[in-house]
Length: 395
Image (cartoon, rainbow, N blue to C red):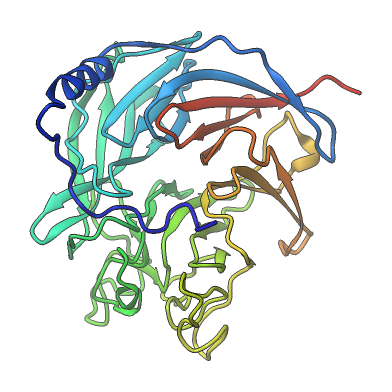
């Protein structure tokens, strides 16, 4: 089975004659509120006891990201370019003011991150695929959620990658907010692996900017000529998960490999994580990639999968609902449609893995620890769902 993020179409789609009515119906439906389909909660076994999974919403079109709002409800992005709020079993109509996105291959409206002061300032950040000179690329914008939650205001683009291409894969891109409030986010190699080794190209990198779009003083190339100022680290194939451990501030990322070689990394300023010079994966044809699995000057991953699980996002669990998971890394997976729970020892080294919900819900794109310690998941399907995972009935 090929990896789930591989070989997405890079061609623009346009309606053929005779499909105008169907297109109109789809557009009209997208503008309407949705109702969550009533479904009975299900329970699943795990190593630490049963888990309860509730469906909070269905009918979402390729949902990509979810964020729990402080006042209740969940903000969800849909890849075609819509934001909706799920609350009390209802899904809002699309919010107004969302910036135009390029729904191209794997690209579209991608991640959401709430500012640490969101409850007061209502500020949030989005990553998206944009159209520009040369084709398509990844951008990051800042906006505010209106007080009545009807739409976005004060929308401003903070960052746009420097080289666009017609390819439709490996846009990244999730956002992690550092303890000092600055923004870290990843962009994939855009399907052109050598770009991940070019320090004058934003592709294949973890980027770091301030909330006004300026460059932090801690960036390795700031003020120099050896690389672009926004770059934090290079050699990443397609990082689609990024987070800070809430306990100690450790930055962690997870990225797609090719046929094997999905990686968890701890990106350090100015370091290079190897793609495509070193990798634990092979090409989809079965051919070898690069120079092997190690090379002097290139960092090794903390953990890797072979075969690939196609990771969509990751979180470090520091919630109260599952104290037995404290410090565990949780990874959403597309290919095997599961959540991987990775235990860590006192040094932070990753040990055993437990796989949850294997094949039960579809392609799991995002995983978020909610305010009450439950997990929120979204499934990247045409009829996608928002799920909540909590403690099951004790055995």
